[in-house]
Amino acid sequence: MIRAISSIAFFFTSKPRSRFFTIPVISCFFFTLLIVQGCKTTSRLPASGQTTSNSAKVLMDSMQRHAFYFEWFTGKAKVEVYEGTNKTEFTASIRMRKDSAIWLSVSPALGLEVARVLITRDSIRVIDRLNGEYYSKDYRYFTTYTSMPVTYDLLQDLISGVPLFLDSQTFEATRSDSVYRLVSTTGRQSNVINLNGVFLPVQQTISDSAMATLSISQQQYEIPYTSPFSLWRKIELRQPQAMEIIITFSKIKVNEPVKLPFSVNE
Image (cartoon, rainbow, N blue to C red):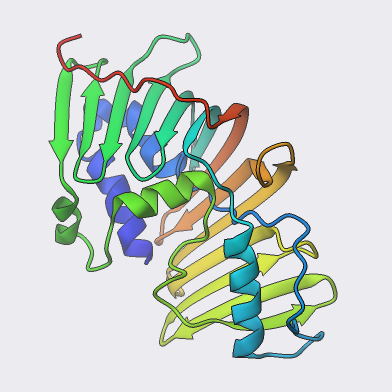
């Protein structure tokens, strides 16, 4: 699981000259929050300390019924990336049409676009305006670096806030006071999702081993949309080097069609 996400990072960081704009596709889109607002259910949830697979299904069903829904999505993301003593800041404008395309425009503090990215179901394309270069890859590229599938749906989930790798695993549920926890463990791999009392994810931690961990936290849920959307997220990746990414969303619009301009000859 961690290797799948790290391979995305490698794709966008394989050219040192282009390092500035590479971070967004790693970071803007490690945003993980499954949105569930005030959900109620007649099925039994786990009592404090109790562990059951049936309760996990109840929680999963509730999250999916109340998941953040959109046909079109636009917004801005201020991204801060920390690697050791190095800090990188930039802004990414995001436009997305559900199940079709993800469009990104990346700018530094001065506001001039340095990169544009178009992600579709069959390819990832990058215009590097800083160096006057163009790159295009399909998803088979990632098989060189990981056996885990990297797909368009994974990237879309990262942006829209769906916790990762839900369909491929079996979870059990526990409860401690007002915190619900979904836990999946297979060998050295684990996937843990913490939900608050109204079933909003507050943290997901995915581990392949003691040396590879991805932790995603989300706060500041915005309510006016079809379901709450987290405006502040923190991603911590350790494999074994540490990277911390803080993303602050603003200017969110839902279900307003927009253009996705992408021309290599611009």
